[in-house]
Image (cartoon, rainbow, N blue to C red):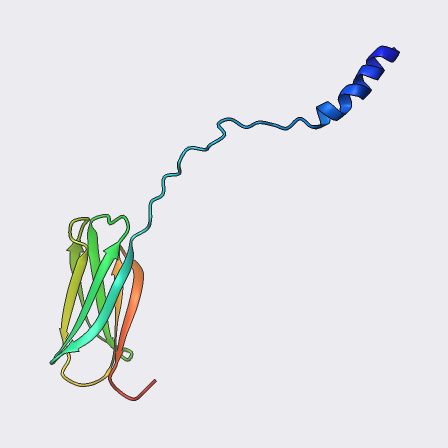
Length: 124
């Protein structure tokens, strides 16, 4: 009876130092897919036209990039263009002769991605 107890007492420090080993030691690489997003977007004036340009990044599933134009709270118009992985950039034009507080909402696949603004009046 003394021998097993003595053996256990002698092995206790060694057994307490054991650690679990998880295999594999290096996990496999993770597959990451980035969502579709707009990396550049700008609203500018060219004469009587307002121009919105946008470029998509990430995994682009073929679909429509849509724009909705506003002057303050009044909707001025809508437009869309078909984009895929080969065509990632779009440009939209709207004729607006007067100065105003313009904004354009850009959405892709029904998800609002960006709002760009152009304030030509002194109002904030």
